[in-house]
Length: 208
Image (cartoon, rainbow, N blue to C red):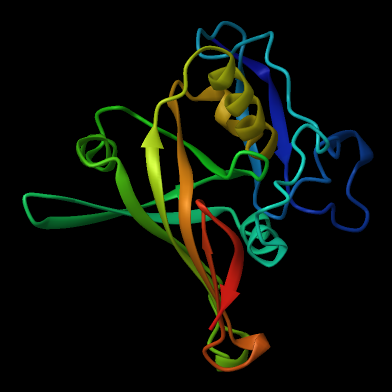
């Protein structure tokens, strides 16, 4: 049953003059402002959910700060999968767990990208900055291992995801994660075509 109350989620910096009562989530990363119905009885909502604080995850010291900073600044990734030599791609909201080198997202287990990803767990993807200015082009291409978290790890990753996307608490969707194993960052601000390469099993990173 929908009550007369609404839940306001604000993950964009608060505009000047915005009512203070609706700004409890205003320090979130820039994204969207939503008004959604509040359901007085909804099985999808976990009343015991705990949102991860900004200090819950420390930075992996082996992970390049330039890459981590870029990933944390954005919120949509594209996954690339394939089956029987037929390619597919999908766009997803994500949360980044720097201490674990993980990208976390939600998807229904029946979706094409999940089925294809589980069939070949090593999948690719990208995160890009949309710009028409050549000197500002930035983006990463990555490889990762698709996994379904269980137990305490699932709770931890769900909390981190909900902290970034609070409206997802109304969705009954499975949490998944990509363990990053290879990343190439392109950043034209450092020079045309300048790239930073990182491999999970190789210490440090290389610039080309």
